[in-house]
Image 1 (tube, rainbow, N blue to C red):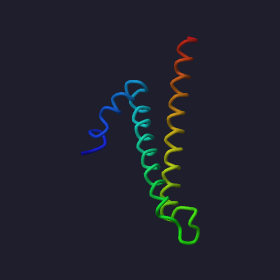
Image 2: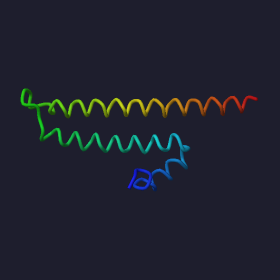
Image 3: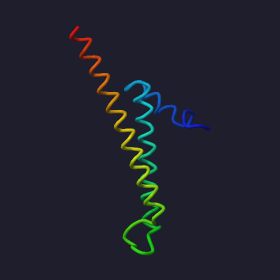
Image 4: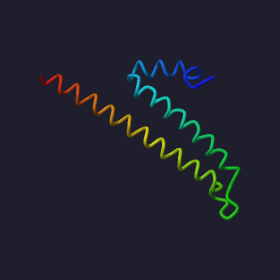
Length: 94
């Protein structure tokens, strides 16, 4: 089963509210957030041998990559919103 089947309800709701592109990005953000939470919880039990107060190095790398991906998705969503607003403002002034 692929993500489009698994997350059909969420995709339909977000695509209706935000449009196809932003809706899919919103669901992707939700998936990234859920994954970050799970990896973070795992990091509590899988700590670094050098510094037990931080997650193991492999988990730190995974968390960093996921946080970066989340930031990129958020920036694309913001850019799409700004473009939509600019087009709407341009149409209203014409």
